[in-house]
Length: 69
Image (tube, rainbow, N blue to C red; front, side):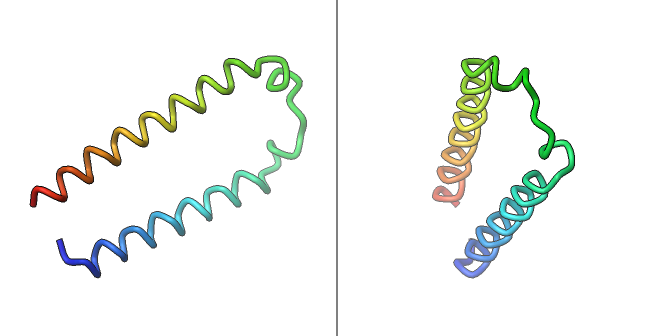
């Protein structure tokens, strides 16, 4: 894969993640406090860790696939 294409894809993903984070941060639902969220920290951390683990596994697989091209 061309280096310029790889850099462009990384920038696109970074911009999309930034925009998504901002949209979640300013959403109306996010402004209202959810008492259930504060009462289940273990479940919240478990779900967040699972998301990160899946993302890391997918990125490692993609990296290995791209390196073999």
